[in-house]
Image 1 (tube, rainbow, N blue to C red):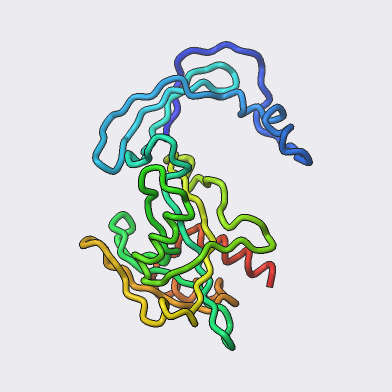
Image 2 (cartoon, rainbow, N blue to C red; image 1 turned 90 degrees about the horizontal axis):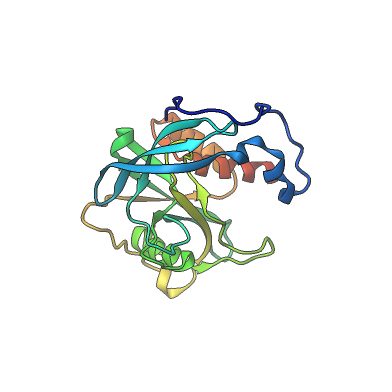
Length: 235
């Protein structure tokens, strides 16, 4: 990202500061950054999958600035997000719960990553449908959406790297019944360019498992590690 001058004016604005938020509806009025807005967009280069864009935005003082970003070119009009990732809990009578992770080579990282099963949303497909489809394709397992005591099994669209991209993902919680006949012999349905290894790991102590994998040279997806930290705090 980058910023540069061009224009100015506007009232004096206090930079930064801490706002105690006890009412989310008040937050936009209290944070000076809410006065910023994008006023221009130029596509510098695009492919079937991505678009590199030059943005012009106005900061809280009224000054115009520049920002470079990359976005997905695959999001359909009306889609809730670009992609889904799946937190799949495997349940079997008499055994502790386990979860599914995937290991695959990611060229930008020049190495293999440890991630949750995930994939792009097709058109205006519902995130629940996309999650169950991707889970079956990547892992071979058939699941059901988890709507437990904590409410909906689907998160709002969440930004992955907002300083770089407007890409968003929805996390979908899925339960997999290992005693069900359809999960007796799971078979992946991978595309020709996909080479994915499925990992089944204990749900309890997930962060320690991820630390071990990172120590072996794998790149652990940030969202997965953050989720594991939250689970550890609740254990």
